[in-house]
Every structure is written in C-alpha cells, then in structure tokens.
Image 1 (spheres, one colour):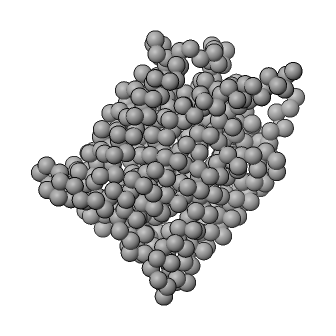
Image 2 (tube, rainbow, N blue to C red; image 1 turned 90 degrees about the vertical axis):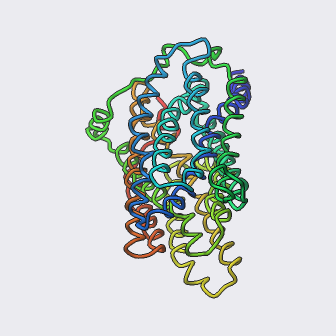
Image 3 (cartoon, rainbow, N blue to C red; image 1 turned 45 degrees about the horizontal axis):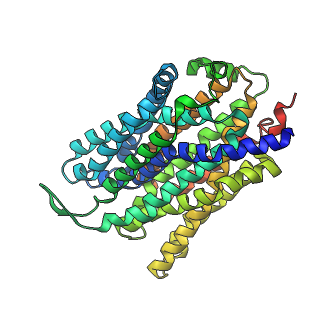
Length: 433
C-alpha cells in the first residue's frame, strides 16, 4: 500500500515540476544567447580576450551577492500570491525587456552596451534565487532529484530553442530606428517574448500559496558563507570539502570554455553569426536528452562512479577538441563544423551527467539542519568559478591561441577527477539509519 502511494505522489508532481520548470526555461533561454553573443559584441570594441573575460564575470560577481539576498528576502515574503511569485512576475519581465535591448546597444557604443549588461545582470541575478527556491518549496524532499532532472531537461530544451533556432535570426537584417538596417539583433527580442509568455503561464498555473508541501517545519537553516566553509573544512570526514573543490574545478573548466566557444566558431572555423550559436546549441541538445537518463544511470551504478567516468570522458573530448583544428585543417568547411559540433554534443552529454548528480550527492551528505548550508556552498563555489574562469581562459587564448581553450578545460577537469577520488559519501544509501 505504501509503495503504490509513493508511485501516485511521484506522478502527481510531474505537472507541477514541469510548470515550475518554466522559470528555469527562461534562464536557459537567455543564458546561452548571452554567453555566445556578448563576447562577440564586446569583441567589436575590445581586442583583448582577457578583458572580455573580465566583463563576462560581471553577472557572476553580482550573483554571489544577489542570489543569497533575494533568496532570503523571498523566504520572509508573505503575499496572497505566495512568497516567490512576486519577485518572479516583476523581475523576470523587466529582465526580458532589458535583454531585448542588448544587441541594439551593441550597435551604438561600448559604454552603452556595458551599462545595459550591468542592468540586465542586476535583475536577472536578483530573480534567480526565487526561481530556484520555487521547486523545493513545492516538491517533497524525496522527489527533488527526479524533479532536478526534469528541470535540467527543460533548461536544455531552452538552450536548443535559443541557440539552434533563435540564433539563426542573428543573420536576418532588420530596420532599427536610428540605426537603419542591421543584423545581429533579432534573436534577443524574440527570446524576450518567450520569457514573458513563460512568466504568464507560470503565474496562471502555479498557485504557490495553495501548496501543501511547504510548512514552517521545512524552513532551511541559513548560515553565513564563511561560517559554512569553516564548518565543512572542520569536519573529520572530508567528502563534502572534496566534492566542493571538485565542482569548483569542473565549473572553472566549463565556465571558461562556454563564453569563448562562439568566438572560436566564428574566428577559427569561419562561420556566420547565426551558425556560431549552434555550438552552444549542441551542448544544449545533449543536456536535454541526457539529463534524466544520467540520473537513472547514477542511481543504478553509483553517483561517484558515474561522475568520475563522465569526467574521464570529458578529458578525452577536450583532447580531441584541441586536436580538431589540426586534424580537419584540409577538410571541407561543413565537415569541419559538423565534427566540431559532434564533439560538443559529446561534451554536453557527459557534462549534464556531472551536473545532474553532483547536487543530489552534496545534499546526501547534509543532515536535516544543514541542507541550507550545503545548498549555499554549492552556489558559492560554482559562482566563484564563474567569476574566475573567463579571465583565466581569455588570458590562455591571448597567450597561446584559441586551441589553448581546450587544454585549459582539460587540466581543470582532470584535477576534478582526482579530487573526486577523495569523496566517500553521497550515495542514496548513505543516509540510511
């Protein structure tokens, strides 16, 4: 009887999870376009990739401060429409409107572009905390890993829509008042329309204040980040520390590569602006396809083993990407591009395997009182990597050329692999009493 009840409850949360996933869908739609084209826009004004990398860290610097602040604010908010929804229905539409103007400012001046990027990141990072917190509010703890897989799939689908389909609009010329006929614009305002539609659907169908899942007993303990780090470092068993150091390294690799892969496609493989977006799209397609299967695979074979296996595969893919330009130099340009995309697709499949299973693994190490601490640490280390990575990878490109991007990624993924060997907890059975 208990088992059938469990199955029923799992089915009952698919619709809720999908609808909550619309919030993640909006982020998945904007982030890849931002990561692909902002370096290209900045490159029209700035020669040094290291400087472009520094500007690209702006959103991550703001995220370290704004995500915890607005998450805490939304925890204490009480309105007729819920505690997260007021932030979502105000900040996300404002973010969408600013996002639409990014490419227009890129056709005008560097300082106008940087100002718009700053305003976008203020609102986008402020709303990210409430969007992320909506899922654990409404989905029971024992179902959150599966919900995470569904939400990651929706983020991957948004990446596909943004980079595979909408990116093609960057090749279309449109008439902009004051600028005349220009290209490299249309994908951003069209993406903004999708974001606003997603917000409307989220507001209509997700009734946060009626959720029976949230109650006062489920409030997570909030701790200052420095105190949290001190507590984890001071633990006798160091598994939590080593998985945090591992995720710092694999995010250093991923966040260092992603902002420059579009520029690589343009400048090394000689594609058009619209086609450049498809590189990140290949990662998104794989992300959407493998998010749920990778969770199921880890459930059967073990999270640590699955993550370490995926990291080895990523190292191999990085080595092949490094050699790609040399091996395919004399080939037809279309063949070069397709083989490059195939390697990025493989990278996306193994990357989502790491990401989908690492957060549940860290949660498994926490007890009831420390879930909030561990969640905060995950975001702190991943955002720290996002701040450090683009200037590091940009400097590697400036010093050694574009192919150094993949050696940079290979080194950090390899370090993460060795750090994961020191992790001895985090499997589903570890919390069995």
